[in-house]
Amino acid sequence: MNLAKFFYLLYPLYWFKNSYQFAIGAFIFYALTSSFSLLNLILGLFALNLSYLIVYAANDIVDYKEDSRSKAVSKRKLISKSPLMTNHASVEELVQFSVVCLVLGLIIGTAINTFFTLSLLFMIFLNMLFFSNPFIKLKNSFLGVFAMIAIQFLKYMSGYLAEGGSIVLNPFVAVILLFLSIFYVAVYKYYKKGFGLKTKQMNTKTFSVINIVFGIAMILLLVFLLSYLKI
Image (cartoon, rainbow, N blue to C red; front, side):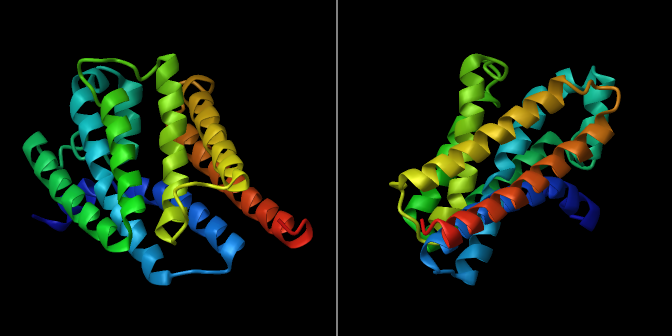
């Protein structure tokens, strides 16, 4: 396998988004407990990103024909380095690589803790059920929106769990994670529908910037609450 193919099969642009969400959850745990494990942070980032590749692979395979017929979607897939759309990998290679990464990611996850691994499995299950299922089209349904919120919630929560947080969240943590998740989905939906498809490259950058800025704002808010309100 050459380096270019390996690079595309990793879906590198998605690693940043997933890592940022994971890091928010890890920071919340640190802010509440003053406890932090750099090893768990690094292992957790790899476990999440490696195991989650199966989701991107499944979405690309299921939607390939439909995506290929849309110039705007094809352009977005090229920007996001889709290995199928860029012809860097076959379906068989994509399946094999993503399955290996899934197994490796879950093995790393079990080395951290069981609750973290379960959060990864549940995220993947929800994605496969609602967004990578060729038989049930629920992506744009009302249930699909709730599934998106739940998936983003679990991504934020995964960092919290990897650092040692309890799966039974206190109300403060639950509200923060839920708020972050709803905001992410709202911006994503607006990005998909409100900006239009003709300027998709600009929209992708705008979407990323909005979520980064919001994430930083939430960190500052957490610091303020914990420092001055003594939560």
